[in-house]
Length: 90
Image (cartoon, rainbow, N blue to C red):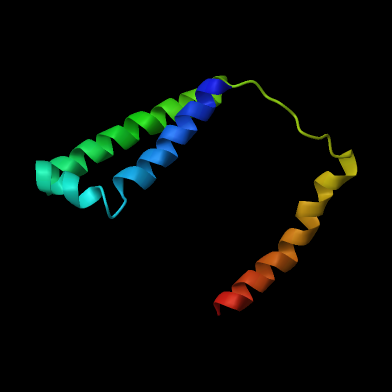
């Protein structure tokens, strides 16, 4: 579970840090636009793979057990929600 937390924090933190207006121009000036984009992409792919693998091996911790009859609620509410969404887009 700790590995999942670390992977998630590094993935999100690296997005914020490397995309910040203070750090990004300095890194681009130092190594160039294409090299920065390539290294940034490679880092994010590695972190995403680590995050997905950490999620896959993390233990399941149920937070609550809903009653069985609540499984029908999304099925009943989905039709009106879809109509409202389509109406909002039109």
